[in-house]
Amino acid sequence: MTKLMFIVDQGGVPVYSQDFAKLGLDVTVVQSMRKALSKLKSEKPDIICTELNYDPGFRDRVSNLEPLLAKLQSTSPQTRVIVFLEREHESNLNRLKERFNIFDALYYPLNMEDILASLKRAIEQN
Figure 1 (cartoon, rainbow, N blue to C red):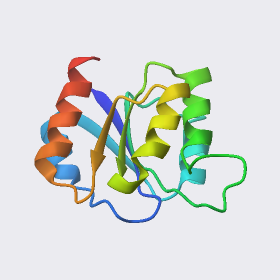
Figure 2: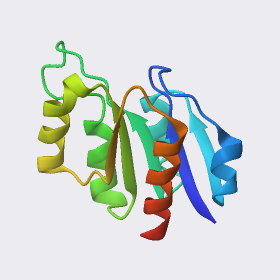
Figure 3: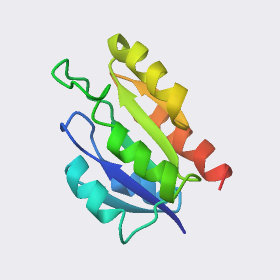
């Protein structure tokens, strides 16, 4: 069974586990990036869905995603990462893509059809 970790960092993404289960996904929902990083010590998800949160106060990084992406790059580079973001932060996403592997990006407002289609593509690459 394909494992999905769904990281809800700011709460802007609805989680519909029953829809994900129909795709044959074993879903783990994590409520913060810090908890997700801790969970990655014991779990190896095939797919991660997470939000890109940009804060101009970050002095040493583009967004909340760098710690996660760096960890995956060194420990689990085959994990497919699907990022949810505001279109205004596309330039930040592009900067991340220069350094890290990001499977797909979906823009707010999200709809379930797009999320499921992206997940299906990620499963097919498993």
